[in-house]
Length: 68
Image (spheres, one colour):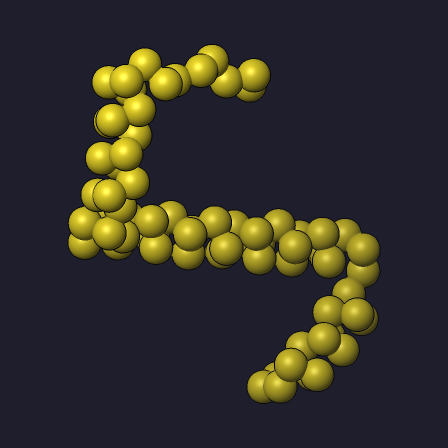
């Protein structure tokens, strides 16, 4: 199974239960990739300007309570 078309066909042949399991697995993979990217960005200093902006907002009292 090497092409997108073959993979798509295999997915379409899955039961609803197995498609749901696959969807959960794919979501987990996406979340892991995001976590790795964020960690790499933080380690490289790429997030430093954003964090400095947050610090300035905190110091200026520009924080608001989140509705969540």
